[in-house]
Length: 417
Image (cartoon, rainbow, N blue to C red; front, side, top):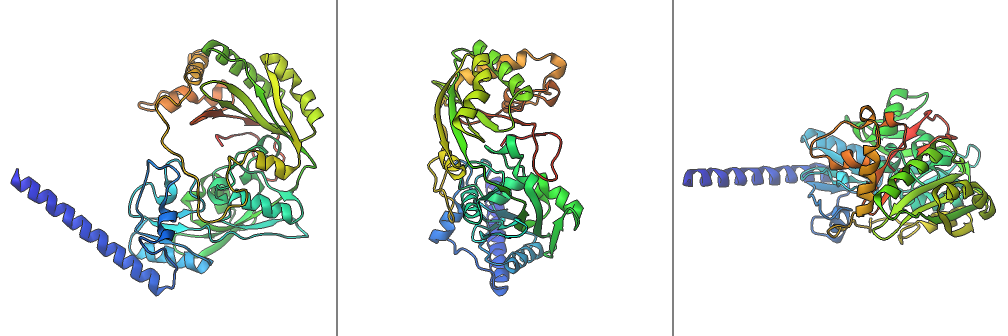
């Protein structure tokens, strides 16, 4: 027993020494290359290492805060020499703390100091650095000619991680995903070289970035096609009369059929479920009267009632769903996802999803995955020809984009947002 204990203590001491040696080595390399970093224990370090999901806290070997592409190149080169894994972090809005590596000991490249947004007045193409937040992007595009790209609702989310994996929000049914508007990117590869990619330059890399961008390098800037902001939008909510699992399951089926076959391209919405009520929430690209006409058939179908409506401009629609965040945020990322209290998942939502899945023929059901209740209960297989449902803590969000209007789009995109 004593031998085992002594061996364990010795192993721990050896690992600790190795970790300290690696930390010292990366510090020396970064310092020698003139790469700015957060000092351990400083306020900047505490801010940059704070996770969105407070249950998943990890400690990087170092945090790089580049202000130039050359800084990113040097950081990647140092990490490669020392066999250290690298993780870029543009915002930090990750439920699994992937921006911090998902484990201890990674080199984090904190990109949010690279946040410039510039719109070409002739081509209307926006060059956006990878650390810009969605709210900052929306604000700058608005100020530079009332332009826009399709993206999500939370202002503090970093553009890079958002757009490289889709980019879903209240413009997706009208204009597609954020990645659909991507025209090109500048990327630091694993060998620390810098390349540009687009449909005509390094097209394979450009194809791979749009959906799996985290696997191929660190994007330092994007080029996005933009569209004119609509002159008006209408923010709305509607109360759904779902008081038990059977009603909710039947309502889901009707809703999904309408979304797939009848939903106007101008309408964007989600289902927001809480323990005491269920609502449709969304944004309509048009006037209040146009919304009322467009949504009336759905209200009749569901036996629902249109609640609040607000006709406003495009930025007003963005502010309506800002979740109380600063509309034009920069460093640091200030939102956190606190551990939910017990039973915060609405019971009605769980049983409605279960009831709905049981109504699907067996050959259409998703394959069972052991220990994956989220997959078993809340994901509808594509063969079932129903939109994808994903539960985000308090609400279920799902929508099929059937009216792509962005350049270089796919015929059908289903995204969990």
